[in-house]
Image (cartoon, rainbow, N blue to C red; front, side, top):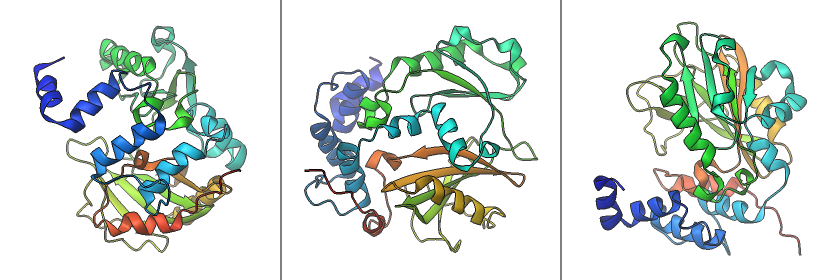
Length: 304
């Protein structure tokens, strides 16, 4: 353990819990106990599972009680493409260039000069290649192999990740006409109805990314989450209504899904389906928005 990590381990209960979790020491802890400890550490309040009212509380309840087999397909970055294509059409899917079980199986000579590598079973196992000739293969191998070794389920007890087969996919690299990374449009849908969305800007820039929240009339909403709001005026995307329509189609029949899209030079691409935004540990300022989003989330009845 590095000295900086050791100091944090001794002094900071949140860091101590995170380090123990990342190293697998808490894997035997029950999901409910683990989530209650996480909730209090990260949000500073006890988790009420008996009568959840806030968005974050209800996400934790869903993580424990709503475990449909289809969720594993929806969380798998390879299988989700097939699932989504069957429902809204292949034209919205970013082309897959290959799929492998191990990094050393990848034949880079057959890949284009620009592409993206992703692990199918987690969040963060990502390598963006904008110039293959300059790619640091050793660095990419280390990052991907580290992701392949972990079961992302144990980090936030999001059951949908537990049984995904760890694989690697290469995707076509998509960018704006000027070469910049596209904005990400994320729709919060509740029982198939989009209520709000947010736009992620500057994700891979040299400064902090921003989140800007909007209602379905594209009026900016007065709150922020973990990342700050931007200081720029964002134009309503030309494909806003179509993205909303597709998001509602994909989320129909489920209590809550966040549906992500890109709008590249007038063409819509599907991003991902997220069942537990922020893993249910999301920061809201002002706090009242945690309750407002919670009011929209209607929990399914437990089977007796």
